[in-house]
Picture 1 (cartoon, rainbow, N blue to C red):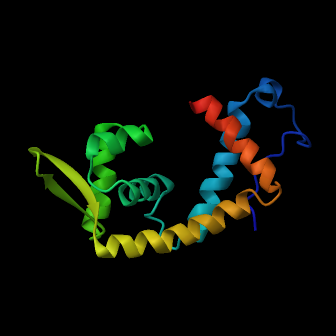
Picture 2: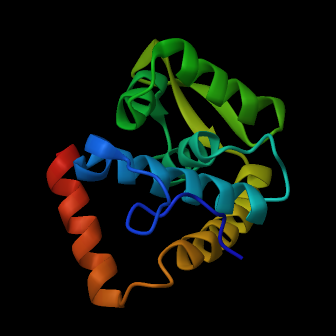
Length: 151
């Protein structure tokens, strides 16, 4: 079941300028996506941001914390909190890099790899529900257009 958010076309009120903006419908879609994701992931502490961090760590082993944060547009404190969250759960570890002992690379643990695989399945289901009213071509086009906006 999809979460309910206002429909701009058939709403009983006038949204004024909001209905003509790009950001407002994106916000509504974000609310739907966030709600779906939290419904499918059975742990309320695992947010989309935290999942995104675990995914990046899993697909980019050894990346420094600063690069992980930059890839998600996170501040240093937010990046540290996301990594600390997964480290406390035994899913990631900070390892000193052989070429620079002052730098740490972030790596999945075996437990983290298992958790990431489990979460990937739930996120894929959530994303399929989010885009269920679009064809495969439309999903591709939507992703292409969004990429043009965020670069």
